Length: 182
Ligand SMILES: CC(C)(COP(=O)(O)OP(=O)(O)OC[C@H]1O[C@@H](n2cnc3c(N)ncnc32)[C@H](O)[C@@H]1OP(=O)(O)O)[C@@H](O)C(=O)NCCC(=O)NCCS
Image 1: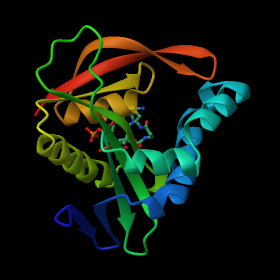
Image 2: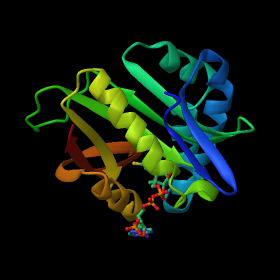
Image 3: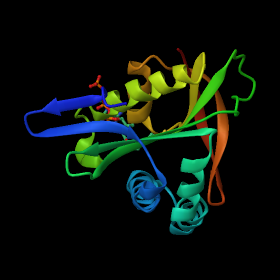
Image 4: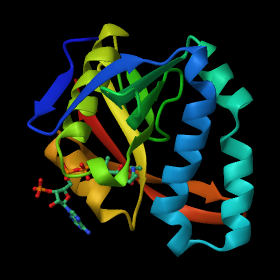
């Protein structure tokens, strides 16, 4: 995956596949970026419940080892995480006609790296990896209020095809389901 590299005068970020050695760093990074993105819109208790259910080194270790998952990391030359994405096979969007779908389960870029091209690089790697899995469609759920992410996904060929509920702690929230043909 080394051909996915973005260089600017001040930084270089490359995409690689996660290994189990990345599990602890990914758990910390995933929890922190989820918190930074959504804490302002959720109760402290719902955030606590969600973070505890989704982010722990043992959980990310299991996902990295799970052959239904592809976990891709964007890291800088010092090895620090700038972003990550996870594909998950075997989950089709409810009520949407698809031929061979793969889910983009998670897609996060750390704040200092947003608007810098890292997300586009990561999306290119995600779409290549989905094609390598034989997928014909890439789909995702994005919170209806997360307009920046929706704008980013539209730029990369996704369109809204439906909606689904995503529960944060105890709070059922409405996600747009977006899909792009590969
Ligand atoms: C979603 C994410 C990966 C996109 O990466 P990014 O580097 O921010 O994306 P870009 O800057 O290339 O594109 C975002 C677009 O939204 C626009 N935008 C910025 N803020 C916006 C807002 N509040 N409302 C609508 N559009 C907005 C930007 O102008 C840009 O469009 P442009 O390139 O035409 O100017 C990144 O912001 C992120 O990780 N956010 C936090 C985690 C998250 O929400 N993940 C998605 C979960 S589904």
